[in-house]
Length: 157
Image (cartoon, rainbow, N blue to C red):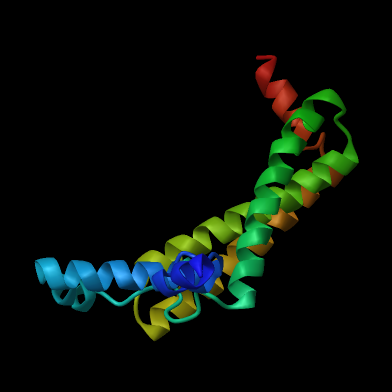
């Protein structure tokens, strides 16, 4: 009996229950204040990473998880670069920093570049910039002292 009352009220748990509770709360707010229609028509609802209508897709969720994994990887690579510098850490930093920067600048493009042609041009430029950055860091790692030793040399000044 109590479970049925909770499910009817939208408190039974899970995503559907939370959505039902939120919808019910918004409808109640709409009735009491009469402001919800103005807020709802002000801007389209946008999902993760600026995608309209794709907030619940598996690809967006996987991308978000990958971004967080790279961020955590960078947190682990920074002490590793200090404690045990070497080629493996240098190339891992090159890949992780490039990917982290690529995704970050991609979000800037998503947020601030509008129109079909400018978005295509900006994304093409981003891919070129990311490729040149990764190639440059790999070149530096192979032909010079590497990222870890370069940062240590800068700190020793």
